[in-house]
Length: 132
Image (cartoon, rainbow, N blue to C red; front, top):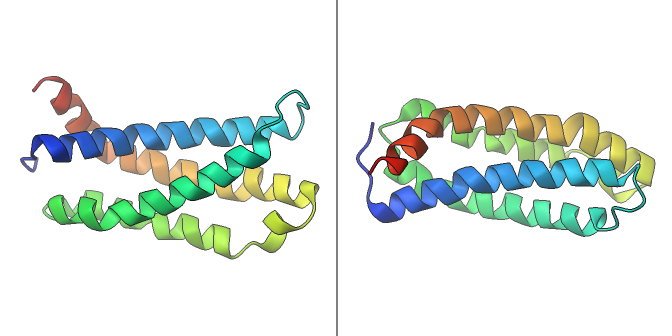
């Protein structure tokens, strides 16, 4: 395990929990398509897209201080596949039904699979942080 500074641990901790928050956001967005009481789905989807930008922007820094952890760096870089899923789909700008199908059946599963792999690699650092 790479030795990290307190600031680096804080960044990993924030990053780890941001991924959980995004997952919760996706769940809300998907539920909002069928539950009319959930009125913030569209705004939350925009927030998810903004969070994607912040995740992607942080990868250069993360990969720099985790460079010895080649497996973790490789998983982090696979986020590009999630972005490619998003970029290759014009349905998010067309009908509500197509948007729902895309988010539920393509974008969210792609994000979730990536998130679970990255968090599995980050878990030892998050656990270690709690014992510091």
